[in-house]
Image 1 (cartoon, one colour):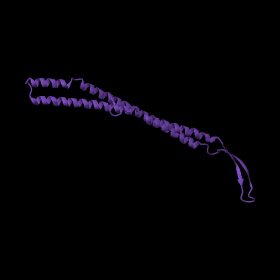
Image 2: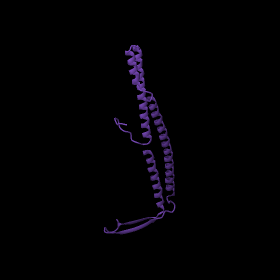
Image 3: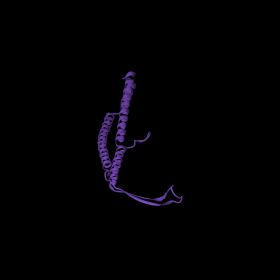
Image 4: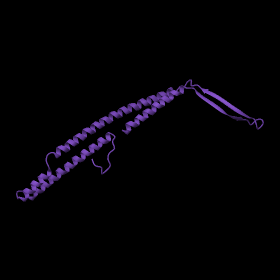
Length: 178
């Protein structure tokens, strides 16, 4: 996932800062070359200048910066570990939700076809053994069953989408098939 990768990158940056601060122990050599002019005297009073310097770090050897960068790296790695545990728990919960929604959808649709009820009700009505209100009640029942099947199907797809997001996967765009 992107958020875990971002914490990895931040921890690596802090490690690199800690390594860079170790280099402050190395003396800093500087060389200067150029010309020097003066306002006093004749206008052509100028001459070459060559200088060298060596800065030796006696008191600041980068210990403070190194300690800060090391502590920041440790903190970022701890945050990453926490995030990984949260992501794993989120994925497990989303997977359990997907399994439960799929099972509910399969269980509800396994108990027969609601169209069979309509066919029987129409035949009974046409045979004169059923009144029109009972036929309408059969239609209403079939409609309620069909709506419930659609609700369960949609809930299962939403749970699958939540699982995909928890795993850091891209979701298909609108109109994409399953």
